[in-house]
Each structure stands twice: as C-alpha cells, then as structure tokens.
Image 1 (tube, rainbow over the protein chains, first blue to last red):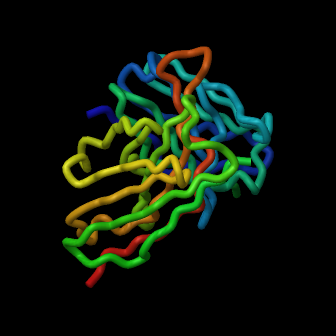
Image 2: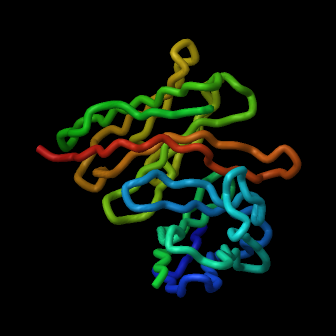
Image 3: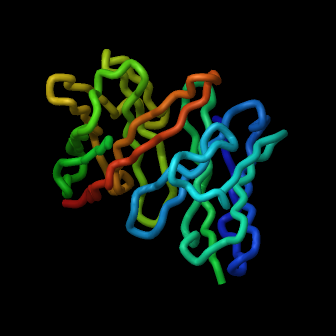
Length: 106
Length: 125
C-alpha cells in the first residue's frame, strides 16, 4: 500500500521560514494537499493541488511537489501557525494521509 | 456557507455497530461535483480515511476497513451516514465528515473542504 512519510516534529523561530516535508514514491506524479489542525479543532485545508491556496489562507503558506517529496513552506512563521500539519494524496482511488508533523514555534 | 455536522452515540459497546450521520447544510448533497467522506482520528494519532460516497450511492472504502464499513446517502434529508460493525477499542476515535472537492482543470486532484467539527466515539463496555 502507498505510504506518505512526514517528520514527527519541526521547530521554527517566529518570523523564520518553516518547511515540512512529505515523502512518497513518485509523489511528484500525484497531487498533494496539506491540512492544518490546531488542538481540539477540525483540520483546515491550507494547500491543494500541490501549491494552490484556498480563499482565506495567508500568503505565507506555500507548497511545492517534485520527485518523491512535497513540501509545505510557511514564510514569516507566526505563533498562530503552531499546529499539526498533514499531507494527503491519492493512490488508485485510495486516500492516503501522512502521519502528521507537529510544528512548534519557539 | 456549507456546513457539515456529525451526530450519533458517543459510546458504543465492543462487537456492536457504530452508526453516525452527517447533516449537510448550505448546499445540496446531490451536487454532481462532490463526493462526501468519513475520516477518523484516534486520540493523539493521525488521520485515517474511512470511505467516500456520491449522491448516486457509488462508494469507495478504505481496504483496511472495507469488510466492516457501510456508507449510505439520503438525498431527501441532505444527509449521509456511516456504519462500522464489530467495533473494538481500536475504533475509538473522533469521526469527521467532510466534502471531497475535485479539481476542474486537473485530473486526479481532490481535497477535503470543509470538515465537520467531529464527534468522539468511544468503544467501551
């Protein structure tokens, strides 16, 4: 079965750039999207179709996908960005989520 | 604005069937653009897709749960439902319903937006 691998945790200082990776076999040949989940809340879509931002998502969120790795980048990270982030892709009509990355802003 | 709301028992006994309903408001569940999905998250763990349904009744299920899952749709009530049989403690989770959106300019590009608030289901005697 297809798997997506994310680092369990990433730390970043306020104002700096955070990068969260998501790895899978030939992931660049698929479309990836990203969700943000804050404690006690439902996931929120922050990136779809590799690099597109939904309405209402700040411009500091961006995405890319090439080779075996999709990357979520948060520029000028703010304290409010501290959350769990999940990547997601499709493989043969099956939905696959990454294990999630806890972003700590310190 | 589209909203989804999960409802159902918060406690289910082992070996019994978990039943949840998602009520969609702000849009018709019969739209040909969308699938409707169930996703769960065990406490402190990651997300797991359970399955998806189209308004016509076409379904896709997670192979790991397929033998125990049934998802159905009631267009007259703008609702879709989840049944998970023979539950164990491992099925304890927050269960979310969500809308699957498909890209209009790219193939095989789908995402989930929005999500319901989620409902915690505990399996315990």
